Image (cartoon, rainbow, N blue to C red; front, top):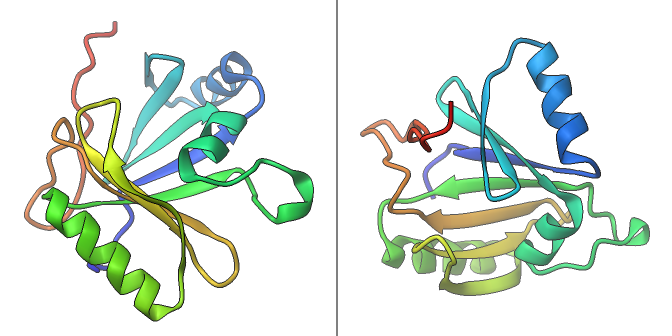
Length: 144
């Protein structure tokens, strides 16, 4: 697994409020399907419903399970790499919380939790091109 983070997804309770907060800080986002994407240097910060984040990564969103509402994503260049990284994570002691599968956005992704419960999504998203150094630049989603 290359040492990088592609996206940080923050599970929020009120998307409009959260977006307004970041925009007051000077950030400019693009909203697509109840998700807000911000380019943040060589990675992206994503705002999405906390319950949807939990469901997407394969865990229950309850206060007593340690889920902090944050998911880290490591994007890779191919679907085969998703399977490879998930296997490496499992061999290293991770718990697979969602086996790899096709996604609604036309990609392929799976998730694991590290020994402390921090959730990682390993994803191949054909709409998010990775530079040779692994940096991610968000596409223009066609929003003003």
